[in-house]
Length: 376
Ligand SMILES: *Cc1c(COP(=O)(O)O)cnc(C)c1O
Image (cartoon, rainbow, N blue to C red; front, side, top):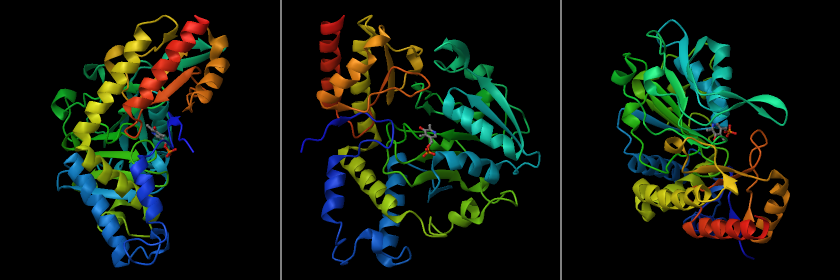
């Protein structure tokens, strides 16, 4: 059985050695006679798995000691509520500011609005007509100097990689550059987590659903500066209160044990490849190959402002959209799967996460060139 090259935006490709190791260990983890799924989350075997996963993640991102690392549930969508539930009350005013750069940050902002006085610090949404309907296109990032951050905001939220629009923002501002003190950055890094070094110390917290680039669905990685913990609103569910989860090292209640185990294997795989710096080098090579080809032809087009093009999620449009179906059908036949774009933007999208090798992108570009020759 040949595995196709999988360009899914998430849940997405996992490193094959991780899947093989999980298969080998399925019935008997390290001589325990048990599958990881069958272990007590408080037993010494799972505690070792969970603590090693936490330590490996700390090593990969050089997470400073004054940050808690938690494995939680509910995905990044649940964090959209869990973040304000934990943080918005920390300065009394229950105010928070959001930067909008695409559909995920819009969702975060909407959810947070249930919990306090939530404002838009900046937005890059541009009105366009798509399929005869007025919609917003998201193709750039407002310059930091234009962000309007309120002095009493409990935090400032943004999404550092918009998975749908393919907009990646890596120049995370410092407090000095924002012109405010004590407004920590809260970053949804779901879809480029572990694809590059990240300066955690510049942020108040970073969160990421694992199923894009760090593991299977079911576990959310949450990294929070410890002094921000302990100010949850009284309505915050106990299982989602960082003050409960952090001191218990993610074992306040039963965590998603198997998902944590697989994510832990992914962390070890990244370490063995040379860490996030190696992931970044590979990502640059893959992204340059694909964008280089897209920019060399009028047959395909990527609409994103060049400096903020995502290295992970590459949306592209065929100049003749009536060829979309033929493109996808031929791609499947060539062993290139899950290239259909998000329904809201149409066209195609290639997600080229850590587990998608350069060889897959080479195969994609070769297919795109061939398709252009036959239809251009
Ligand atoms: C996928 C994604 C989400 C939502 O993740 P769920 O696990 O479905 O809740 C949120 N933000 C970003 C940037 C994403 O890519």
